[in-house]
Amino acid sequence: MPNKKRLAFYAGSGCGGCSQSLMLSPSLATMLDGADIAFWATRSGDLTEDEISQLDDKGIDVLMFAGPVDGEASIATAKLLRRKAKRVVAYGACAHLGGLCGLTNVIPGAKLRELAERNGGFIKPLSAVIEVDYVLPGCPPPQGMVERMVKELFLADDVPDVGTVFASSKGVCAQCDRKHLNNPLEEIRRFHAAPPDPDICLLDQGYICLGPVTRGGCGAVCLEANRPCTGCAGPTAGVLDQGGAILQSLASLVPLSGDISGEKEHRVLDSIQDIVGTAYKYSAAASLLKRRVNDGE
Ligand code: SF4
Ligand code: SF4
Image 1 (cartoon, rainbow, N blue to C red):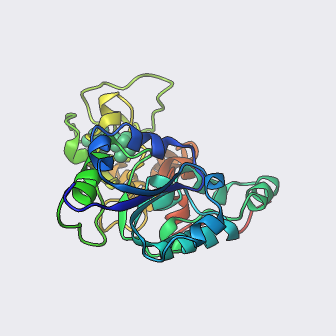
Image 2 (image 1 turned 45 degrees about the vertical axis):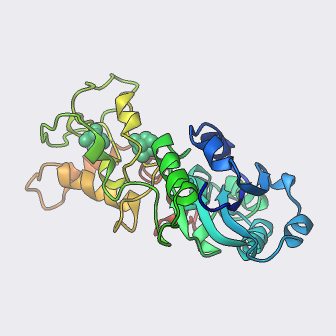
């Protein structure tokens, strides 16, 4: 390692997949060789506020922060950790966008929302409460992206520019080699009904795929497994709202009926099951929607 770095990993909440993704990195041993580890906390209980307070301000070179922030206690911890670190990486979809946990912000039904609030309030991406220097996207971050972070952040002489996202600036479609037929979208098909043709673009077959609006860099691994991209790497550069962007893309594929009421277009788009869970699977908390304010009950 060119410059010995003091590093730390913190996962306040979430599923544990992020720390696993780092453990599986082939470059982990090289990264840790000679590094100084301030702490490696894979759940919030591993590290008390007192222990964090005792660390020197800006004494950590790089802090990898995984999991969403979801209430006053976790916001306070994130702010305290920020004081201790020169550079902070939002590690994984939950820290980046709120992740799957962010869907609790839009749960319909007062009782479920009450439960979500009691469990710590509404989910926020890390960047909503502290300044974030880098983003490693994904749920969990795919190995190609983990490797890129390790090489650029820990093994290179120079640190990457602030604002670097360790993923491609192009969409997942750029790494997907399925054939395009440019078929119009006449109906939405679901995976349990019939498996898709593994060689043809899923959108061409009527299956929803978030590849066009999702950052690439994962090697289109889900497509290789004949599954759709569900958007875990977040929106491509320049896309403000990943869910809105895919809904707009889908709408543009529905053939115009010539009927000013848009009845046909509505019929196709209304047939999407769980529209928020599909379009905003990982990004609800970071979207323009952010949270549900009215249960409509
Ligand atoms: S929409 Fe999905 S299936 Fe089609 S090219 Fe993009 S990533 Fe591949
Ligand atoms: S294909 Fe999409 S959902 Fe799958 S790993 Fe890549 S970005 Fe994530």
